Length: 356
Image 1 (spheres, rainbow, N blue to C red):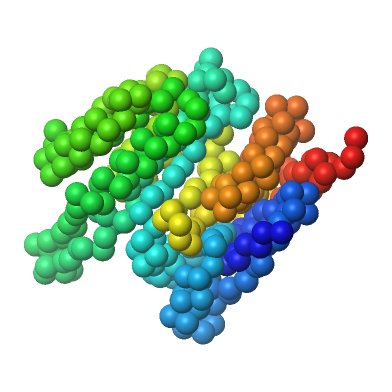
Image 2 (tube, rainbow, N blue to C red):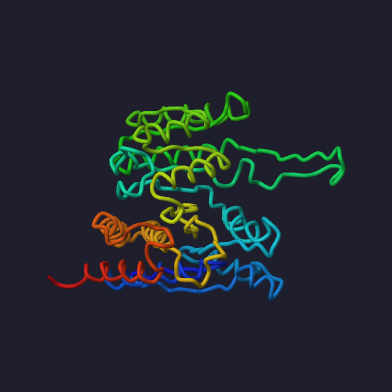
């Protein structure tokens, strides 16, 4: 029986609640499909920082490096300056573990969830591959004459050929393996950000190695418009860190909102990070109103990464069936209590292991 070592950081706000439901589902899937999850919980959160002054101690970080995956519930607290916890936990994981791929599925499970008129599941089924360690998020910024009338603020975008190529190559491999239209779209702004000519050149070189994959190119502004107008045009798209951050949240709304959006931060073959992307929503903490669907789907992505594809597919298909049968109405606070959603998914997953 396979055993997978999982690090868990439930984090802030609704993070602990949705994480608890996600692992109820994952534990049920482990029982049904015959593997074990060896879970290590870590207390790192904004409250932990306020209590102890530590964010993510080096010793604990080294422990996580040796595990199969890391699950993060949510990070963010208005009592702490913007960016401190995000850079101390999320950015540290992405940069120090070299999680160079952010993979965001944008998949509509039921037409009721989509704000676009006349669009259904057949129209919205894409994956955005976001380069995850370069661009505007490398932390290369500064201020001159801070606080004065003539203050200057700078932020440097940095791309390397190796960093761009490994993201682009993953997008082509994904398009080949996922059984869709076998199409990859490059999204950039090379007409204005001339350094992104690097993206266009690398994309063309990699594309030549994949003659079975068709290609397209959009500037980020046009891509945002097309995603709303003709989302069915997209299969796999690859883009930079900043643009990926923006367009994936647009995509999340097409599939039903951030409450259904899951994310993988990946370095193939090494410990990788899985998370819902809805944020900590501290106003809802402890109220049993936050939907755990995004966390459950992040868990499904984690199982796929760990090689438990059958269990991963079972969880996602269970969620799809619950939406399409209207047993799940949606992911708004008023739709279902947090624990009720978890129980629905757990019950259906366990039923898969019950003899007919």
